[in-house]
Length: 422
Image (cartoon, rainbow, N blue to C red):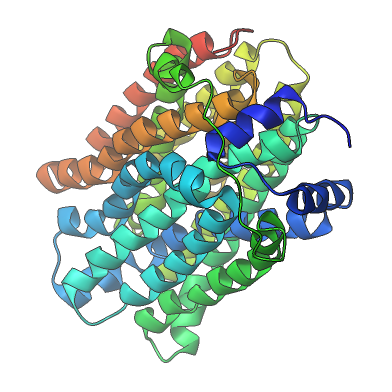
C-alpha cells in the first residue's frame, strides 16, 4: 500500500481520526473515479447561496406581511450572514469529531430544515430559520476548501472554479424563479421560499455515499491518533498574510450581500417593476458565473494575483457607481459589470485561501478564520445599508459607503495576492 502524502497525514490529524484500511482504499477508488464526489460537491455548492438569494426578490412581500421597517427587513438577510461567521467557528471542531463528510451531509439536512422553519407564520421563526440557514451554509463554506485541497491537491484551482461557479449558478436559478414560483403557488411567498428545501434535501442524499465511504461502509470503528501541528491554528491567527486574505474575503462578501439584500429594492424604488427587477437581479447572478469560473482558473496560473484583484474591485466599484447615477436606464449594464466583478471576487477570495495555504490543514484553518471574521464583517453590510437608506431616504449615501469598501478591498487584496504562504 502506498504511503499517504504529508498533506493526508496532516489532514487525518486535523480530523482527529485515522480511517480504517477499508475506508482508505474506498477513498482512493473514489478519487480515482470521482463522479459521486463531484456530484456531491456540485449539489452542495448549488445550495451555498440559494437560500439567501431566494429572499431578495420577495423582500417587499416579507416585510409587508410582518409590518417590518427597512432595517428590520434587512435582518432577514443579515441574520443568516451573521451566522455564516458564527457557524464557521464550530465547523473545524465538528469536522474533527465527526468527519468532514458527515458534517457536510448534516449541514445540508440542517439547511433544508432551516428553510422550512423560516416560512412558519411567525417573525421569530423567520429570523430563527435564518439562524439555521446561516449556520448550515457556514459549515459548507468552511469545509469545502479543505475537502478540495485534500481530495484534489493537483487541481485545487479548477475545482474551486467548479464549486464557486455552481454556487453562483444556484443563486441565479433561485433568484430568477422566486417570483414566478410565488405566482405559481397563488401568491404565496412562503411556498416559494419553502420549495428550495427540496434542493438541499437532494444534495444531502447525494452525500450519503461519502458518509458511508468515510466509515468504511461496515461501521468499522476508527482509531484515534494523536493530533499534530496543533500550533498551526494559532499561527494562522497571528499571520499578517492570513489577515489580509480574511479582510479581502470579508469586504468582497460585504459588497455582495448588500446587493443580494437590496438590489431589487434599489431598482423598484426608482420605478422599475418588481418582476423586471427580479429578472435584472437574476441576470446579475447569471453573469457572476463567468467571473467565478474564469478568475480562479487564471489565478491558479499566476504566481501573484494582483492584476486580478485590481480588475474585480474596479468592476464592482464601476457597477455600484452606475447604480448611483443611472439605476434604471443602465440597470442591465450595471448588473453585467457587477456580476463579472462579484463572481470574480468571490472566486478569487476562495482561491486565495487555497493558494496561500501549503497543505490541507492550513487551508481548512485559514478557511475557518477567513469565513468567521469575513462573514461577521459582511453581516453588517445589509443591515447598515438598510439603516442608512431609512435615515437618508435614498440610496446615494449607502452606495457611496460601499464604494469606500471597494477601496479598502483593493488595498488588502493587493497584499493578499502576493506569492507567499501562510
